[in-house]
Length: 86
Image 1 (cartoon, rainbow, N blue to C red):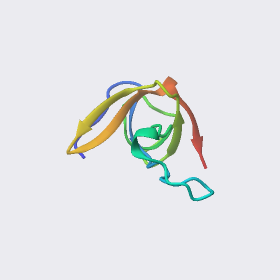
Image 2 (image 1 turned 120 degrees about the vertical axis):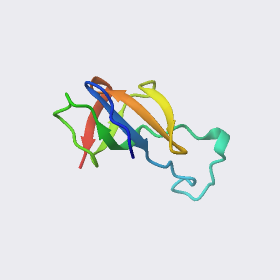
Image 3 (image 1 turned 60 degrees about the vertical axis):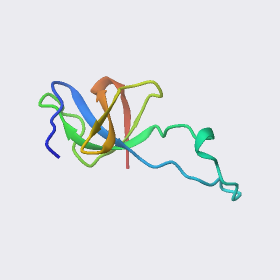
């Protein structure tokens, strides 16, 4: 990908949400919430706390959605990243 966020921003690809509950009920698309987890695809030059490939958790109303090369991504300020999953 040919994109680099500026400053303390990261480019995140959201993880896919499960289509079934643990009991096997299928969740329709219009009832799903967007996942609050993603994988960092690119980082700005001032980002020190996370790296490309980290799985992160972010706030529900954080970031700006963008479409690059036909895929949807989220640009987040580093302060909107709540944590890194192991």
